[in-house]
Length: 375
Image (cartoon, rainbow, N blue to C red; front, side, top):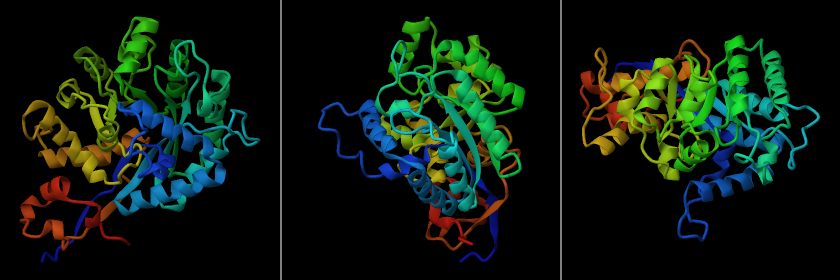
């Protein structure tokens, strides 16, 4: 039994869709088709999204955030896109859904970066369909005005950051990217976007613009130190280089990417290019920030047939993953530090027989959310 006290920097999960916590268990039996994939899962997710109202999104978000807090997380990045009433008409209070999510995070003692998503279409030349109408605005100015409103509303709360998000190259037309990027840069806001999560997204982007997603974003000035490419799963090497040259970040979401069958990102290429990595809980299919971190390394081991692929010059692999899950995760959410510490229960069963000099390795590679003391 170890009697010493150990505290780690508080964890940050930089990509969350809190409402999807209500899907847990719902999409694991299939749709009846023989080819269930991301797109069939999305159909189930849209059904949930279309059922939400301000009270239910608050209640679900509190459940999701309470679970994150108990798992050692103190900062969450919320990629928020359910804005309007079913059918697409705005609420009288246009930002009520986002405000409710922020209130839920604060009620559960989390810092939150709320990234209000711009979403404009179902795809190239296609108007919003079904639940997507709740996500969309008739023009970019309305979406940016809502971000301004949120920033003003929450300016006095040091535990809240408002940021900008563009859903994806599928849902946001090429002409929007530069003004969104300029809006974010002028206000010092972080800028998040789903990037190359699905091969179909890449093919659609090539068909519409002749450019791959990261190429398109670079063409329109979207890349920079405050840009966070979420997923970055199906990049070519030169796209990783474009992200690295811009000193951009990538947020990988391994537990969700596994669940959806997205594929494995080329972690080695991203790191070799200088892209800073962090992790996200994304769909909340499971809530284990340590699993999201170690899976960045473990997935790359599967992809390459090599071990310990995230080592750094001055940090062990466990130290490097912890850096991703604390300092870099918080930065991706708009915060300059991890926001405190969490205490490890050194008597946890997972840490039995572990030498003191190997505690962090065991915590990162073998620990679960049960190792954090609850105060």
